[in-house]
Amino acid sequence: MPHIQLPEGLQGIRGPMAFRPETAKPLNELAEVLLHAPNSLTPGERELIATYVSSLNDCYFCQTVHGAIASAHLNDDEDLVRRVKADFKHADISEKLKALLVVAGKVQKGGKHVTANDVEEARRAGASDVEIHDAVLIAAAFCMYNRYVDGLATWQPKDEELYRQRGKKTAKEGYVTMSKEYLPQQ
Image 1 (cartoon, helix red, strand yellow):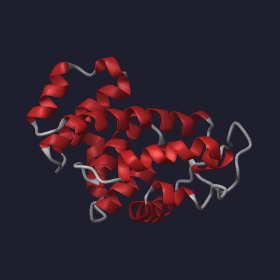
Image 2 (cartoon, one colour; image 1 turned 60 degrees about the vertical axis):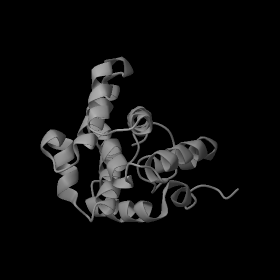
Image 3 (cartoon, one colour; image 1 turned 60 degrees about the horizontal axis):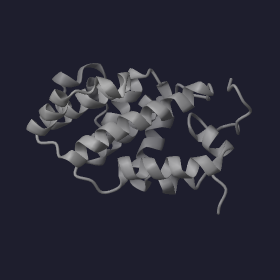
């Protein structure tokens, strides 16, 4: 049961966003830029970073929904998403993404855990400064999003099919478009 009265029937972050649409707008815009907008990292790779950080934070809603979005971008490869969460170093992903996940995992512990060597390893694996920046910001943002979801004890149903459906829709439409279904029209 949520700690505050949130709109019923909206799972995870959607409830608090509908509760405070004035804060939801910039949060959705940030997610759009970081995860969906054109970038040298694919949307699937960026969603994997969000999923991995959310799994480290043990945020069921975020790791499940962003895992579903990642899967939708990656030819419905749910097994890859599970492997990245469990042991990304042995998952079938690029060395660049593995290096960025190292950086993201350290950001999840605390920004000062990221070392110059971690960044240099990411560069050696082919990551650009923009990709390193975005991996750090995705990790930092998802620490915030995870704490927002769990700090309010939002409703997080266990039916994975709901997340699959939401994942496919968000992968196709993005975050700003998707938010219009539960936020008041401006």
